[in-house]
Length: 74
Image (cartoon, rainbow, N blue to C red; front, side, top):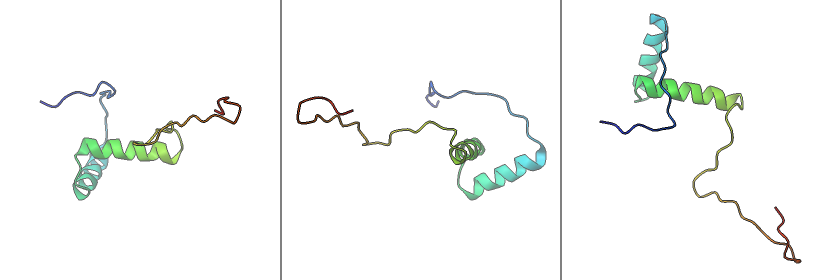
C-alpha cells in the first residue's frame, strides 16, 4: 500500500465524459496516471498564473553574510 503524503488532499471531481477521455489519452501519451496528469495540469496552470508560492529548489540555501562591521546584511 502506498504511503500517504500528509500534504496531499483528496476530493471528488466531476468531469464530463469527453473531457475525461481527453485527459486519459493525454496521460497515456505522457506515461502518467490520470491522477498524475490532472495534478500536472493544475500545477502548470497555477505556475503560469503565478499563483504558487516560490519554493526553494534542492541545494538552494539562504546564505547570511556579515558586513565589515560584523552586522548581518540580510
